[in-house]
Length: 124
Image 1 (cartoon, rainbow, N blue to C red):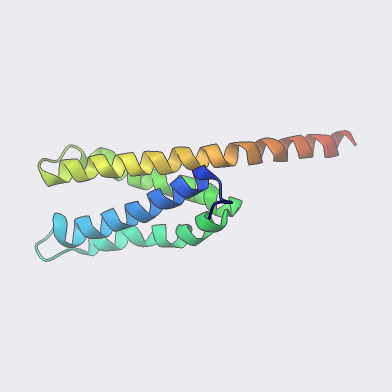
Image 2 (cartoon, rainbow, N blue to C red):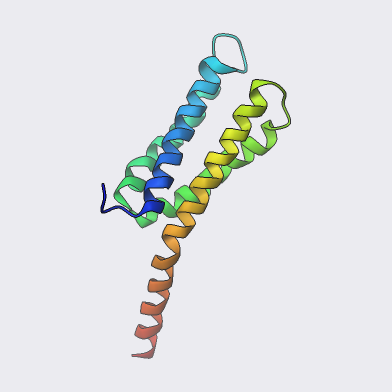
């Protein structure tokens, strides 16, 4: 675990926490309908990203950076609600923003290296 990039760890943690938040929010904290709703399923796409994030797979991090924007958007829309939903939306926005920024920070040097390698190949 100590050999992992801190941005990779933070992004993975943000995805796990976001999944837990989505499930808890729609199951028992403040579900859309009493006794839970089918919106609990919105957390499933996050589960597909978590193993790849943990392993540091660049392709997974690329598509996960787009996926997490859906959760950021949901949080921005639901922040207009009142009571518990407002605070849950705030937490969702914080987690999604943290995950997105960490993914970008992890991928930045990788992209820079790939561009430099491509430039060398074009010159040589």
